[in-house]
Structure formats: structure tokens, C-alpha cells
Length: 285
Image (tube, rainbow, N blue to C red; front, side, top):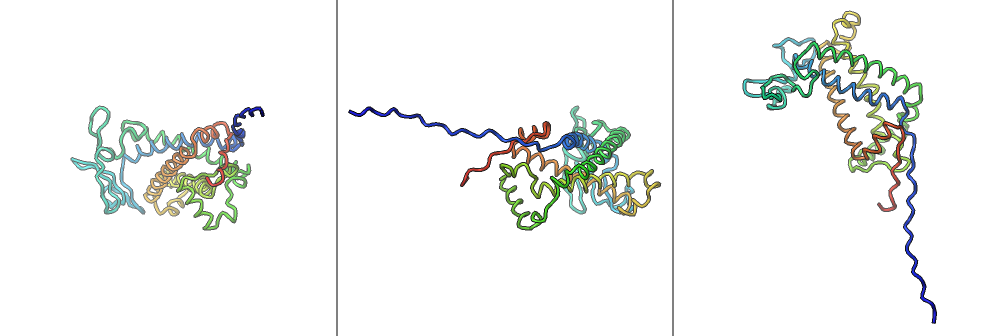
């Protein structure tokens, strides 16, 4: 009689050890966190400054009775936002709102969104000017490192095949489907990331600094050509405001992508520099 075979327990497949790559160098990490804090303070102090005259114009106009293209205001009963001829009631959010002590206020932006939280144009300007210097110096140093240290050539340079409309459209569809790169591809920037980062570093932030300088009477005397470039101080103020909110939109999309792609891995890589590559998708997955 043959002996019965001893059943062999199935062996669980061994998962490969996670692969880590050094993705973010120290200058990029320092600038990332300094820039995040700086832009937040600049935004909140800028909203306090805007509260002093919550109207935007184009050209050389800017008196209280000139036609503004954007107004955040209030009536005796409500708050409102007007852009051109389009008007929306914003009571409780913009124009007319109630503070923590249940006191009704009529500033354009509420105190929780501004620095300082109580109305003070002088303090808002002090905060704004101080951190404008921080932004300018940090951006200049980072741009020099990007250009001279190889970051632009190595990580942000858009190569010829990436300019293909088909390639760009594919990246748009992959992001819309929340299908993020995996494996070694996850360590490289996609075309949308490259274009957005280049736009922020070399277009939006320098534009914020240039339009900020254009609004300064002292700079108007020293560099009057800035007024010609931007079509007047009020146009510069409008461009400054629009660009600021474009940066806010970039920030919100950036945070959403971080949360969807894996916040622990993404934030850890921006602190330590080391990024854990997501494993490649299995066939047919």
C-alpha cells in the first residue's frame, strides 16, 4: 500500500522590497517649505491691504467713483461680489460677515483670512513688505540653483517628444482618470507637472514681484518704465490680484494631487528627499 503524500502548504509570493530614489535635493526642499509659508503670509496680508480699497481697475483709473471691473462691497443688508456686470450675493463670506464675537463687519475679506485679523492697513503692509523680500531673495537663489545646478536641464526641461499634442492629451486623460505614473516613471515629472512648475517659478512669481514693484510710488520714481510695461499702477494691481488667485488655484490642485497620489510618500519625500517608487501595475490591471 502506497504511503499518502504529505500536503505541501502553498508558499506566499515574496513581495519585492520597495525601491527608494533620491528625488528632491536639499535646495528644492528648503525652497518648497519656505515658499509655502511665505506665499500664505503674503496672501493673507495682501487681503488685508485689499480690504482698504476692495475695487480693481484697468489703466490709470482708481478713484472711488471710477468704474471698477471688480468690486467686493456691501449694502445695508448684504455683501456682494461684482465682476463687470455680473453680481452675486456673498453675505456671510465676503463684503458683510459676522466675526467670532458676533459683531457684523463690512470688510471685503473676513478677519480669519487676513493678517492681522483685525483691520490695520499699516500692519498688513509691514507683513507684506517683509515677506515680499523673503520671496524675492528665495526665488532668486532658487532660480540660480535651478539654472546652474542642473535642476532645469535634468528635471524640468521639456523634451521634443513631450511637446506632441498626443502626449500632452494622454497626460491630461491620465490625470483626469486619477491614473498616476508608477515604477520608475513616478520619479520623473510629467509634461503637466513640468509646465506648471516652470509657469510658477519663471512666470507667476516673477510677475507678482514685478507688479508689486509697479504699485510702489518709490519704484515709480526710480523705474517709471514699469508703469508703461503694465499699463499703469491700477492695471498692475489687477494683474497682481489675478496672479495671486491663480497661485491659490495651483496650490489647491497641487494639494489634491498629493492627497490622491499618496500623501505620506509625497510629503516624506519633500522632507527627507527620498521617494518610494509605487510598484508597477500588474498585467491587465
